[in-house]
Image (tube, helix red, strand yellow):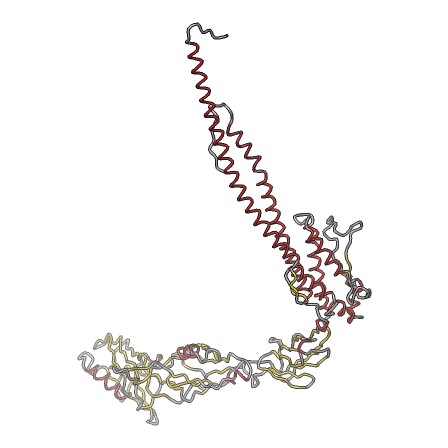
Amino acid sequence: MASIGFSGLGSGLPIDDIIKATMKAEAVPLQRMEKEKILANEQISAYGSLTSRLDALSTAMKKLKGEEKFETVAAKSTNEKAFTATADHRLGAVAGNYNVEVVNKASSYRWVSESLDSNQAFSGSLKIGDTTLELGTPILDGAGVETGRTAWTLDELRQAINDNADLKDKVSANLVNEGGGQARLVLNAKESGEVGRLTINTDDLKQQVKLSSDASLSQKDATIDGLDYTQTHSSGFYNSDEVIASGSIKLSNFSGSGTLTDLSVDLTGKNLAEAAAEINAKIDEDTNLYGKLKAFIVTSADSTQSRLEMRATTGVSNFKMTLENTVFNNATTSAVNGDAALSTQVTDKLDAEIKIDGITATSSSNSFQNVVSGVDININPDVVINGTDPVSGTLGVARDDASISDRIDEFVKAYNDVVIHLNEAKKGPLASEGVIRSVESTLRDTLFTPSGGKGDLQNTLASIGITSFVQKGWEPGDAANSRNGTLEIDRTKLNQMLAEDFEKVAFIFGNEETGYASRFEKVARQLTSDSVIDGQINKGLISTRKSGLNAQIGRIDKRMAATDMRLELLEARLYKQFNAADSMSANFNNTASYLAQQMENLPGYTRKK
């Protein structure tokens, strides 16, 4: 409330204090409404917490609703180092024992090439399954016509396989570097078992022959035909008519009678003889080198192959020949033959194999689904199978009492959470709420009504070891102890009933019509939300109350807004009225003073002392 204060100079009255006291008294209803709103919000929050707990109770009951829920079975292996198993009665699993032998683990197909020069270049194509991978990058002429393809290194081939869209889900490629410049290309199938076996065809994959200098022969003194030379040559012999696809030769560090700091000759498109002639032509152009350095072609003993050799006159030192990226056009027979036998990680059998009571079953993975009706068997990937000796164990399938006991525990916990929350709420914001007593009464009636009907006293929760905790002297509705009304389990009795009278436990909880699970699930649902019963819409007790509280808050907000407006108008009116009265009082005082002064000035006027 906004206000403008005055001191009451005319009347001498404390106008501000009078109006503030008046407004404070008038604002009492507003404070009361604020408290009502706070309480309503606290009640909504408390009901929200109660709803969450009832929902948890409903969820727990669904796991026990229906006697078929008590047909749960569990599978256990006597040798979990070899295999584990799971069972599901809904898929047909029944109690029984089976002898299981693990014969073979599933593995992925692995292809390993022979040892290759890691810098070797490759051309042609590689076929993996139905996918043909063309090697190299197209070489285009000025008109955009492909005239050839560049070669790929082993690593570029690996990268191309991994980047191929058709192969990315089927295979991964890696290089294993052996040292000394040697490496192997390794292809691993991404899917295990025979279904992932790869067909690798290297018939059209060509290894380009590389012309290279012999590192061990950088410079060597030799006598040929009675003449002394310093020589170096390419490594190995090559087919005499092979054409060099690309590359160049570089001669450097030549000193002596002549000087050569750097001479480079392009060898592209030439055979060895043509390459030697081109080199010699370049040398002869240099008068300082003429007659001192020359390229030769040396043939093999059978005259079918040749090598390139450089010779210099004696006295030459630090002579070096470097062949840069020099490869021949044609290729030798494929040298990329892969053989799974090269890898110890590959066996003849890729599928996993087990025997169940002597009957063989296979799988592309280490998992055997529904191999016995409703039973899955999983081979331990770390199991060690020595030679042909299988690893065995017994698979037992039996009723899963532990799972049923866990679900009963879940029900008891959920029910107790509801009861404790109700007891605590009665000490707080829900103390005066009739809904709480209705919820308590509904739960209590459900709890103490046996399965099979009120007359069937043999089918109570107490008969299977579940009883209600009640403090001595406690009466229903008393919130002095939060544990009052909660459930307790006699574990010994419950386990005995599961072992000796399982059908009774299943009936008490699971019967579709009168079982505790069905009734508690229905009650929890009806309390928290709207439901349809026999074609009629039934409003949830708690949801209806929360809606009412929200509507109440809306009404309070409107009343508070109206009250605020009324108080603002009242304050403004009071100040206006008091200020007017104060002004009038001041005028009266001024007039009285004037008259008194005039009278004192009249002749013969004597003021009484």
